[in-house]
Image (tube, rainbow, N blue to C red; front, side, top):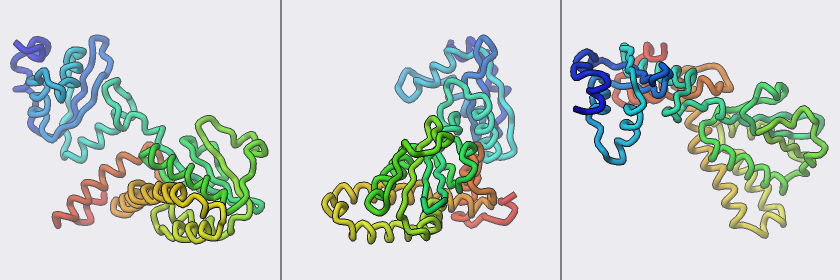
Length: 286
């Protein structure tokens, strides 16, 4: 007899519907240890029952080993199940759920112009920088952070960086990074705002032209190109997809909060599939 049957009974799966839904697995202390979703609840939980000693089943085996209860909730559609799963993971952060559990670490990028300075901030705490115009939230800390810090290096060739020792104390927030520059063309505020927002990548062309005119930048062309490539990756994998998701899903609030980012992208993926299959209609936006 399998460990699944010993714990939950041979007839457990017969009581599980074949509808879309969310299942929650609890341990001996009634603590949630895993939350999952399924197009077919019975089929998905049957995979736990039939998990074998192979690498791809290892996680399921460990979860069942710790489990004492399985609860499930039927949903009207696969999208509803995915949205419910996301919300429950955000609230409970079970130990076996990683994706989506740490939404509060999704970064945002902010900008402001003040007294002849153009300032940038990379942070997961936008609420602490009330005077900045923010963009995001972005999903990949790797891609977003690499693009942000490489841009700060490139802007040193264009403007004059203000030493951090002269930054205002209230801007020194843990895990947040602020850079300020003088002698940056004032119109770059709008140009880079459009870039972060996924509306236009003209900022890259303008930046390249400014770098070509700088003797220091011309001395290290391969390094400069790598740094520019990171900005192109950010545009392709973060800025543009976020703009498309917001446009298609009809989400009007911007910047997109860290909490709302995953649900918006779930709706976007479902709507995108509907558009491609020719099944899209205005009701999908509700």
